[in-house]
Structure formats: structure tokens, C-alpha cells
Length: 186
Image 1: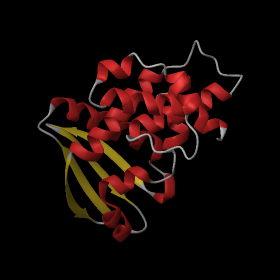
Image 2 (image 1 turned 180 degrees about the vertical axis):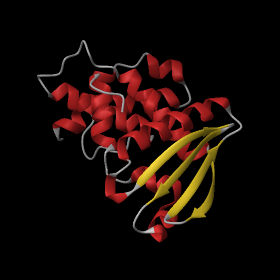
Image 3 (image 1 turned 135 degrees about the vertical axis):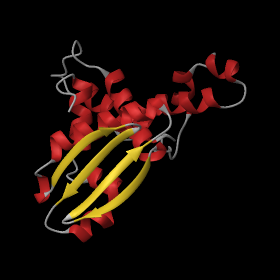
């Protein structure tokens, strides 16, 4: 079994057992003995995206002897992943075409999601405006944020829509590692 998978296997198994019926019995099991008895193929999917992202970061941090554990803040990463989840799955987005792009109004009736929307849009615009020739601006509105995106290809901006624009630049993975290391928030 690869070292990365070996380091994740106990966490994956624990999460699976704790979510199964008979939780009290699962909590008293000797997981190290059980892991030693297992052989053959091991599952690699931890069952939940945020958990998988955190597990991957923890594995990277554990394998790096230069990790400064006094700065590591996995809870900050968890909070950021909650914001990402809220914006991706719980926000409503309306689109208005403008010359050169679109205005995306991102809202929610849920105050927690509104906070996530405002943090994510402000942070994304601050980090990515100018990237790929795009000009971005985020302005708060009553229940969220209005994000204006313009650039050389208005059709591409409109096709990507709000969530596609957030994915541009593949900056999220290094950003997540930096958050966990305590190096930056955005």
C-alpha cells in the first residue's frame, strides 16, 4: 500500500465506522489491530470532498519535515471549505449580460451563506482580477454580492458563469495548503 494511502486509511476507516449504525461499538474498536488484519485492495475515496481535501493537506504537512506545527491551522482551512461549499451549492446566481462580459448577482436568504458569498467573492476578485485578461469587481448587495466580470471573450465569461469563473487559474489547491500552513488567507 502506498505511504499516502497508508496514512489516510485509519482516518477513512474511522469516519466510515463512526457514521455506521452501532457507533458505540465502533468507537471502542481497536483500529490499529483491524488495519493490520486487512489485506488486499483498499478504498481510496474518503466519502466527502472537504474531508478528502483536509486529509490530503494533513498528509502533505506530515510528510514535510519543515512543517511549522505552531503555525498550522486546519480549522481555518475547514472554515474556508465551508465557504466554498456554501457558495457552490447554496447560493443563487442571476446573470445579466453586459458589454464584454456579465454581472453575476450571488445571493442567499441564509445569513451564513451570505457571509460565505461576501468572503469568497471579495477574496477571489482580489486574487484573480487581471488573470487571464479578466477584470473583476465585487460589490456587496443586500443578500450577497454582485460580481462584474469583463474580458476579451464575453461568450466564454457567460458560458463559464459565476462558478466557472471561480475555478479559473487552478489556484485553490496551493491556496488551501497556504491556509493550513498559516501563511495566508487569500
